[in-house]
Length: 106
Length: 150
Image (cartoon, rainbow over all chains, first blue to last red; front, side):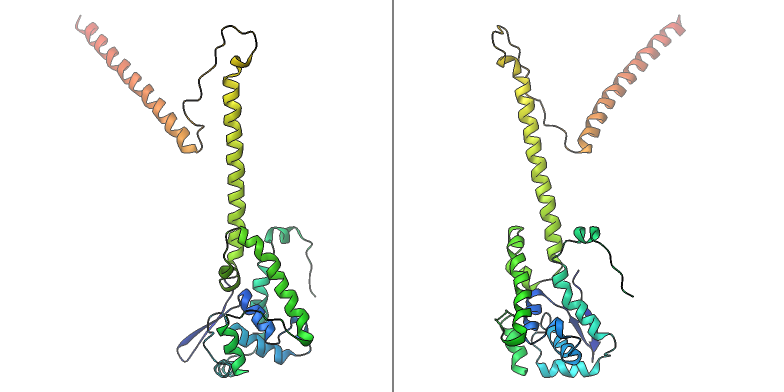
């Protein structure tokens, strides 16, 4: 099941998701996962715009930005990164992952 | 930027070689997808499914391919078993200087593949036994009646 971020604004439902093509497209728009720490706002904006390409590609950037202004930003960057990583992570075998060495974060 | 989003969406988000500091990242991600693509094409996935549809489809394709290969392996094993069985049954013909070889005929039926077939056979033999038992009971009742009359 595709990883999605769903919300409704003014009665219209939106589904944000990434496909492999939109991952490439978002990187083409200037997003780089290595630059998130240095440019969090730019990364957030680009990730936000890229997440609309899969299911709402007919929207203009202005419309997408308008929606961005209305949504809660807390935890949004992390959620968008999760969406963005999903098409890459699904390429890796979960069986291998089960046997791999586990790590913890403090 | 307005044009940028619409341009990307109208071209279905196809990757174009970037320039400057982003080039490396774009290239490596694209490389990863391009490297994985042939494997999934072999598994029966289409280019469109791989790049534009639900990204978790690849997991289903991997599992389906594994099942398919497992089934093919079992089919090949089964074919080998039939060949082995056939050769074993005609083995007497292959013994030199045997004047009256008695080869066994080939199997009447294929090997039962599912538990259901075995239980069907068991049910059939049980029915025969039941019919025989009922016949014997009827015969005994007749005999008993005869003795009671006398």
